Image (cartoon, rainbow, N blue to C red):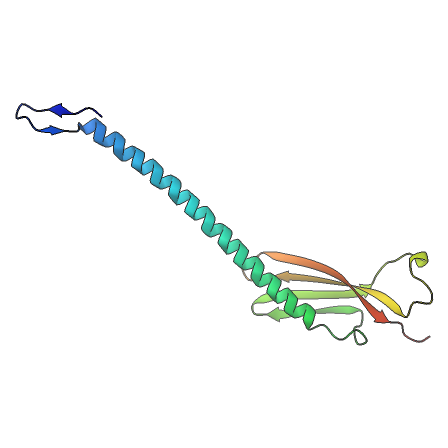
Length: 133
């Protein structure tokens, strides 16, 4: 930047130069602020997903034992998270399941929603003993 001297011999920046410098500083600070805001939003999203995953793990661990699991629907709330679990026979072609198999596959479909709105859905298969006919 150029320096101009006054009639008294005092050197300094012009008003235009100072305003341009302030505008550059403001642009850099706003860019940094945008990056920080994006990082905070991403961190919150990760925290919500981790809380959902933890609640889902707790619910899956609390499912009845293999021999007690029955088809049907359960729902409730855990730590503010609303959940629903549907257990139904898995639609498998007859040729895919050996007749000698001692187990029947059940589809366990869980939907879990956080208080803030995000939701996850998990589907797994549990093998339960065949009921004697």
